[in-house]
Length: 232
Image 1: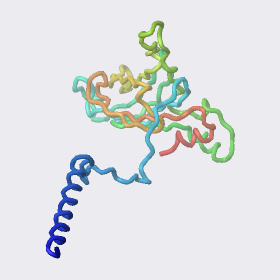
Image 2: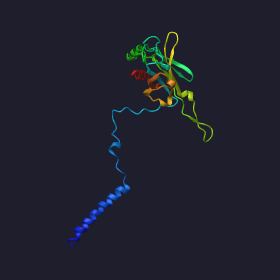
Image 3: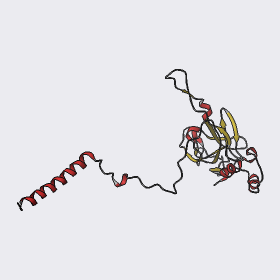
Image 4: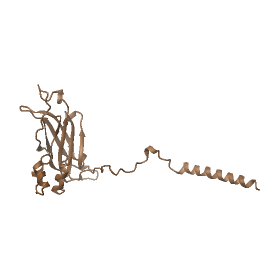
């Protein structure tokens, strides 16, 4: 008897191990490789950008435009000279030009300030201003309303396509004849609040290589809005 009990105990132990292994293989999910495990959240990561709200006013400004070293058709920007292009752009919405920038001379990367310096100084000193007085760059755009369901059970939603497109046209400003750099159509549905770096490679964009676009909620208090527009 004393020899039987250890033998039975050993058999039972082996059976338990085999049974546990069978349950694990059959019913439990396989372990996740270390490379696929979710990393802990980064407390310093920027927040996810939310899409723009429908039927809402935003200030959209082009902070910077970068163009290729040569214009369309591989032409030099300043014929007979080594100077860079004198860049300017305009914004069109619903078939109307709603903003035209100043000219930034001799550069492949044009930058424009959002807020007039004098207005910013006034705000810093507690003065009151309106947005029309403050805005040195960009324009106020209203996003299209949410799509409405057409008539009939299977009818597609009706959308005013022109209301959701902002067109940016860039050119080299010359005394006698401007040289077109390119045109870009921005879909409001693709933009988010904050800064977006948009890159292009030919097509209708022509010689435009990059646009830096900032979108800010128009309905925040004017002082906060001006601070957000002027932020680096």
